[in-house]
Length: 253
Ligand code: PEP
Image (cartoon, rainbow, N blue to C red):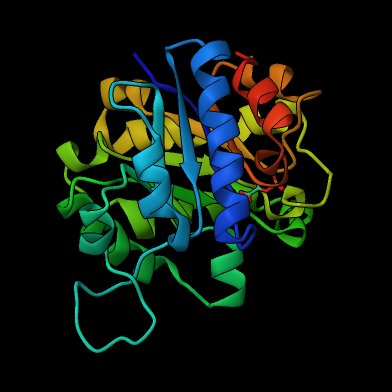
C-alpha cells in the first residue's frame, strides 16, 4: 500500500521564532483535521529541526525532514551538514536534488547518488526530486530527461534500498511560478517514472513507491492532482508557509 504524503518545503524562510510558531499551529491542526493515514512532513531549515522535533508528539502522522545534506560522511567541510548529524536529531525524511539546489549550487545526478547512499545508511528516507525545465518540455524530451535523472541517481540502489525512497516529480517551470502542471501532465510523467522503475525493480516495488507532485500546488488544485492514479501526494513550497493552505492541501486526498 503506497503512503499518501504531503511534505512542506519551507525553503529559506522563517526565523527561529517564526518557524516555531508555524510548526506549532500546523502540528496542533494536523492532529484535529488530517486523516491519520496521510503522512505530513515538515521540511524545515536546519536551524528549526531540533526545536520542531521536540514539538512533534510520538506516534502521530507528522514527521520531520531536512532540505539537504552533504555528499561526504564527515570531515573538513565548513558549513555543511551530514546525514549522520540529521539522524542524531533525528529527522525521518530529507529532500535531495531540489531543482533550486541543482540550479544554484550546481548539484548533479552523481552527487545526489552519494547523498542518497549516506541518508539510506542512516535510515533516513530521501525525497528525491526530479523534473525538467521549460525548454526541455517544449523540446519534447522531458520523459527521457527525467528517466536519465532517475537512472543516474537511483539505479545503483539495491532492491531493499529502493523501497525506502520517495520520489517528487517537480517540473521546474511550475515551481514558485503559480503555473501548475495539469493533472494530466503530472499523471503522464509519474506513470512513466513508475513504469521505468518497474522495468528495473519489478512491478511490486514500483507499485508500492510513493511518487509526489510538486509545483505550485494550492488548496484549489490539490484535489484534482492528488486524484491521479500515479500521484501519491505533494511536495509543497509556498503554500506550506500558511497553515490554513497547507492543512487544506493535506486534506485533499
Ligand atoms: C517546492 O519548493 O518544491 C515547490 C514545489 O514550491 P512551490 O509549491 O512554491 O511551487
